[in-house]
Amino acid sequence: MTRSILAIIFSLCLANHAEAKNRYEIDIIPTENQVDQWQNGIHYVDDIQKYSIARVVSIHDDLPDKQSTFRVFIKNNSGEALLFGPENITIEYDNIYHIAMFTHEELEGRLRRDIKRRKALAAFGSALSSSAANGYTTGTFDYSGITTHGSSFNGSGTYSTYDPALAQQQQRTVQKRSAEVSKAIEARQLSGKQALDGLIRRETVPPSTGTGGIAAYDAPPAFKRLDDTASITIVIKVGEDEHRIAAKLRKIE
Image (cartoon, rainbow, N blue to C red; front, side, top):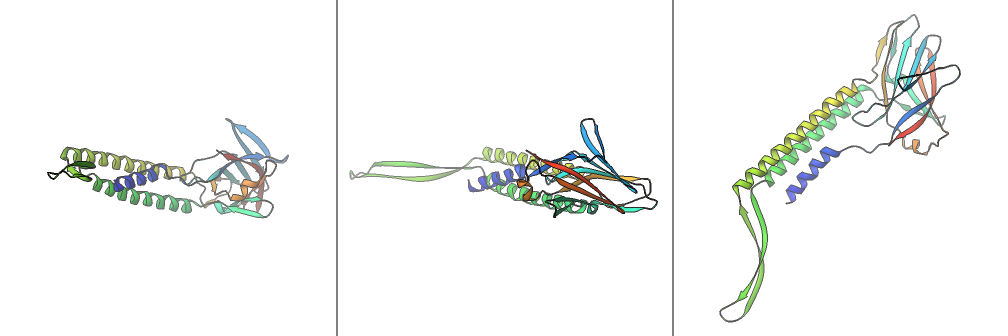
């Protein structure tokens, strides 16, 4: 019984594991000098400077490790190629704190370690379940009576009975559950990689071209105490230009 319970616990850990995080969307607050636009219900703002354009899009993407996200796109209007990546994007709040964006390598590493952990737990849970699926049923019984000398007696005992049909049924159940867990892990791995493909990566941006994608970060606990009037500033550095776009936070339930 103990092994069966442990196996169920491991299965539940695999199926329902999700790190509890506070996630946020952004509501952009454009200034008069910024281009404020909506398209298909999605809000975005362009900040135009001498050598570049930076666009922030108020949309949230689901990532495997549950980060807060928004999207950033830039265009290089200078005459030279420049490097741009997640390290060029930060969030400022309370006028002093800065939050860095994750790189693709960091989040890909998290996903890889999570999949490895899930596979190890799945193998352990499957081994426990297989060991418990031995076809034995156990129970207790009470007995009482009177001896030939007229004295009474009573007590209790346990029994264990092997049933080959039950053993086969239990093993089939274990195999089915193991296959379901393996399939779920494979699906998470595939969907996770696809989601991470949208992240901004460090690259060279030639003149008159652009790049962009998902910017992802872990929201600090301090975000909980920001009131409705507080705002953050998304800072995007493109070559010599520094773009600053204000936004409010909206918690994702």
